[in-house]
Length: 421
Ligand SMILES: *Cc1c(COP(=O)(O)O)cnc(C)c1O
Image (cartoon, rainbow, N blue to C red; front, side, top):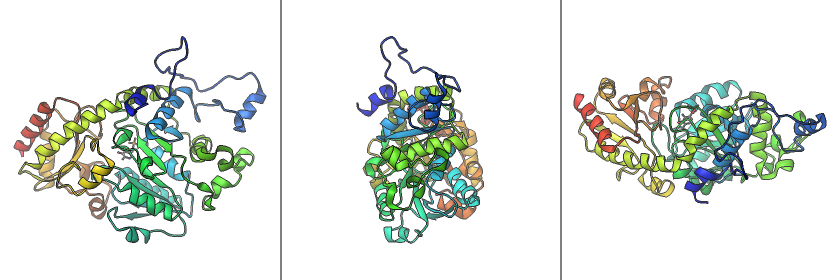
């Protein structure tokens, strides 16, 4: 199946007489005939649902669909993108370990890495993603266990050189984790460029309609966990009577461990109803994302010609520093999200945003409706000035998430708001 077809058909194949639409199995529990069978479920020696903190048939169908879209061996849905990043990392690192991350990432992930993981004894070194391989190599330590970056960074709209980072990660025998939220598998499939784990906030384009928070972790199945660096994968797990993940689950060791160990213990699994809504979004993902890209390209061109705009970050613009990387990693488009800086003060940016009539001023992005946000006073408010600059944010920066309205209406709205400054 091609990707548009997978959006509709992967993960759920109704049999004779079954519902043609994915059903909502809104149940916490699953009934079995014998305690012996349930015992086997607890030992992970037979497949089956046990309790909806760990798996559920509706959520499972959506996980299969997303794994198919990314080209992975398995996926695990979570209640938010943040939960996916957290579990995705804790599945590899523990106290005393270290991670290397691109500095240009989502503000929430910066907080998680710099503050919360630090409290748990996990250290992070942020690197300039445009630095040379030699320079980035200097950030590695003996206890480095993973590398992290975002395909299209939120809100800097920079493009991550996945192959370069995969090379560096693999030279150090550690996996590359890529947050592919803005690109979605429609625009880029990081596994094809060497990434090992992909993470999404499904809250964004995958849901697309701003109705449901969610996240997902996808496992490529390609990373070799048996080098000796990752004993949690190769030594007995006492909480499962000495089960060894790489021996019992082979290529699916990572994603199985994330589910049966971390999801069991942390409990951030979405409800069947949430997964049903996410699935509705996924069904139209390909058509929506293509239209978001076409609309955003026109808005980016328009903004780049305005004398009130200092700069526009959108990789399809010819003079954008990521134009070449975008051609390689994002040949079908660069999502609907543009960031640009209004000339002059922070107040000018606020004036622009407050003057928009069609676009909604919301803490959200990647919605079917055009929406706008001032990162320096909202999502990235907690960052220091230095961190702001490292994340590619200026005081006048505006994040515009171009929706699916008629392009003439979007441009008219932007035009009148620029005029208001
Ligand atoms: C929004 C976002 C997250 C966090 O996702 P939530 O669903 O809001 O928890 C993580 N990464 C990126 C790139 C995001 O845009």
